[in-house]
Image (cartoon, rainbow, N blue to C red; front, side, top):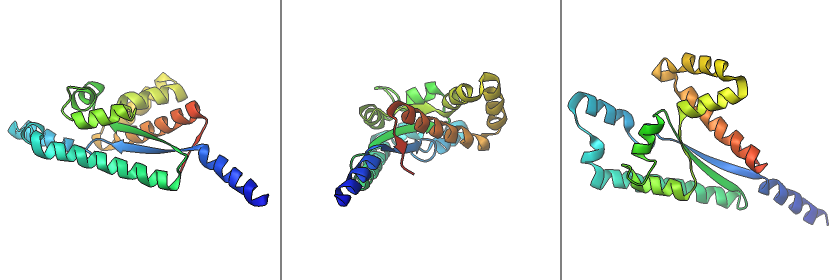
Length: 179
């Protein structure tokens, strides 16, 4: 009886959790800085040049990597939910043109994220919304202006967005995120 009580408690604990795969789009999944430099200085769009070969392979590799993470999580926590979210410092419109609709440049990734119900989020928009809900709009705008004036500080927007994704899913599901 003690063993079965322990297993039930363990199972209840495991089932009440979720895991999050939070992906940084910029320069981690997609070489957006390199593209910007080449386009601005040499009018070369590497996404168009490499689209048929390397960009398709890049997308396949990213999807394979995400699936490997999912498999690893399911091996450790077979009854957990897994959520996926993609975050970028790009604007919402840029994201839609790059990855967020059926005519985007990265169609394989776009399709994969739609199938997996993974939101593709602009860090600026999402962080502002989250901070506004938590601290009020004026304070949120002050924080965003302070952290966003220098490009190297915009990583804070991404981490705030990661926090908002986890917090949002916790509220909706009533589950805890595995650490």
